Length: 109
Image 1 (cartoon, one colour):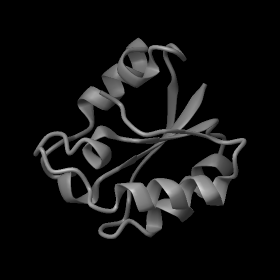
Image 2: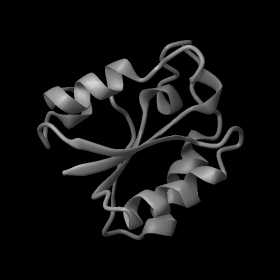
Image 3: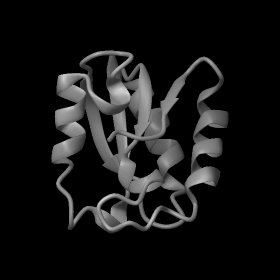
Image 4: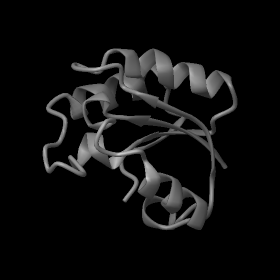
């Protein structure tokens, strides 16, 4: 499976995505059901309120992603313990834009 990963722009200077990549490679965390995956894109949400996440998700699907992944920094607030206040709205907008056939994973580790 190929995934496109979207991360929080506010935390990108605190986290290089190392754990996200490790979980994807080892098939752990959110990937326990799918097994190891290939990351075909790693982008930010574009900053608050995350409106660019929708177009970036569509772009990654157009470039071969089978699923879109919202990194744990968005939904869980990892590493700073502050989840995105726009998480639910962003998730809903991406799901609506991609359609029900597209898979959206809303955490990594």
